[in-house]
Structures are given as C-alpha cells and as structure tokens.
Image (cartoon, rainbow, N blue to C red; front, side):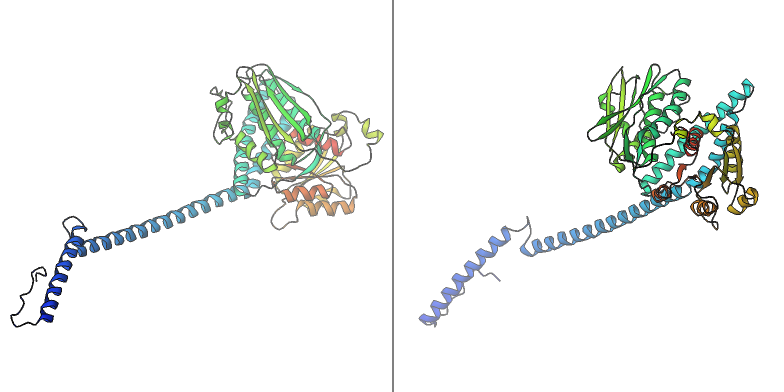
Length: 454
C-alpha cells in the first residue's frame, strides 16, 4: 500500500471532511519520508529489521565466544593447579626421604674417611682418594637437589641463634685449604672473634658455595676467606684471583642452571644451582649479598650477617685453656654411638678408632645398655631418627643422662627442621647434619671433650 498516494476526495464531502482528508494525506507523506530515511540509515542493502537481526547475531556470537574462553581458562586453571600439586608432592617427597637417601652415603663417607686414616700402599691411597672425591661429588649433587626441594616445598625454616663466626669459618678454612692445595692454590684465611646471629647450617651452605666456586674457577693464585666488621653486621668475604665476571652476567649467575664462565674441567660436575641456592637462602635469612668483580683480576662474594650476642658463661678453666692438640684430646676418649643403621655404626667405629678413641656402637638404647654393662662414656653420639617405633635420639640422650649426669651429647640427623636444631640447643646438646664431614665431627668432639673449640 503506497502511503504517499493521496486518497481522492468524494465530491459530496463537506468542508470539514475535506480538511481531514487533506491532513491525513499530508501525514502519510511525512510517514513515507521518515521510513525512507530510516531504511537509508540501516545496513547497506538492508532494512531496519535486517539491522536488528544482525545485532542479535553478533551478540550471540560474542556470548558463545565468551563462554568458550571461560571454559578454556577454567581448564587452564585446573591444569595449573594439578601441575602445582604434582610439583609440591614431588618436592615434599624428596624433602621427606632425604634421611633415607643420605644414610648410605653417610656410611660410605665414614668408611672412606676411616681408610684415609690408615697407612696404605700408594696405589690403594690413590684409589681411596678417587672414591672419596666421587662420594663428595654425589654428596654435593644430592645436597643441592635436596636443598632446592626443601626451599621449594617451604619445609626449610631457619634456626637463628648467636655463635662465634670462627666456629663456622675455622672449620671451612681447614677443609677448603686442602681442596685449594690439591689444585695448586693458596687459601689465605683471616680469623675473626666476631659473634653473629644466623642459622649456622644454612650460613655454612652459603659460604661453602662461595668457596667452591672460587676454587673451581681460579686457575692460579689465591683464595681469600675472612670478615669485615660493619655497623649493620659482619660481612663474610670470599675472594679469588680468577677470571672475574662481566657486568652483564652478574645477575644471571644467581639464576638456576647458570654456570660461571665457559671453561669446565673434567672434575666440574655442578648443576649450576649453587648460587641460586645462595640467593634463596640469603633472602630467607635476610642476609644481603654483594658481588664485586674486575674481569681478568678476580671476584669478591660476600654475605652480611647481623651481629649476635652470646649468653654470659663462665670463663674456660685453666685445664681447658692448656689443653693439648687434637690427637691427645681424642686419644682414649670413650665414645658411645647409637644409630639404627648397622652400616653407620661400623663406619663410625672405624673412623673414631682411627683417631684413637674407644668406640662403643649400638643400634638401640637396649643394645647399648647391654654392651656398656654399667660403664660410662665421655661423649654420646646419637642419631635423631632411631626407627618408627623407637624413641628419638633426644629421648634416648635424656635416659642416659639420668644415669650419667652431664654426659656431653652430640645429636646427628639428616633432618634440617629448625625445631629439632633449636630443641637440641636448648637442651645443651651439639647438633651435626648428615652426611657427616669428618673434620667437622672431629672438631665437635674436641670441643665437647674440653679441647680447643672450633
């Protein structure tokens, strides 16, 4: 129906009707013009209803794509949560089984160290040395893996306590002096009487990594180990005369699987995780790190540790101050060893007897009481984990101290739990972590027996 065509006016229409018909025709023309304007403003070649249909279609497509995106994001979140749960399960498992992983390694290290104490033919000495180095490599790699897993799993908590910095650095200097000499290097150590507050075991891990890298990447010259007193704390320094580190690599070397330099000898079996562990541990402890290096002249790594204050104790007796050397202190010392692993017991007996001690080993408290037959001991070495059903090493030590008050106790464990270390310290016991380093054990025994403290 064409609205623009005017209707014919009847001949017999009156004035009023004619006026209304003309007005109706005018309105129809206006409506026709408006509809043409609306149609011309729509989509090309379409009409207003076609434009409406197009808008509805677009809205439906947007809705469908939004729902698809939401489903994809939900699947990604679920996959990420599953991957994180699997990774956390892996790290927690590795952190939990570290005790079982380190037990056989600890026994092997004890036997090898005991062999090194005996005079052997030259070919046998070389073979024992190769075995010892291989075991140290395994210990370093396994320790790195376990440390990373503990840090990732969040099961490694610091045990902050005050201690003389020499208690840590004297032992490291003696140990790494031998390693440096084997590579034709000189280790220069400057001792310090400063007291710091930190987790001794974790701080040792940091300084060990500094020393290992310094020796590994220095072909000739010297290694420096020492301290500087700062207002904010004690800065422990490890310097070398190696090739140095270019400016652009100084941040990258603290990341996982990054290696210092490009020259690797046959003995370099690191994973490139050492400085990554250093960075994480230092961050957890709140100890700032510093690196200064001049390419071609060497590098200086340092960690700043807060000052500490030791509790007031009585001064050492004259007998202690005049104690003779290590050998005479250990000679004839009666050492009790309790460990539920027979291999550990045998290895400890061999090592201790090589130092001149009289070792009595047992796999349980009942076993020890049967063998001791009422005799006493000078030091008790006890493993913390003595089996699922057995009491732990702290309970065993308490039982034995009831019979022999004041018995010096050294707890040995592969568990890095800060609560265990804190409890042993509160009880006045020493604490060493597995796998045992023979020099650290020897110095701890000398300390407990009243010799020169390490």
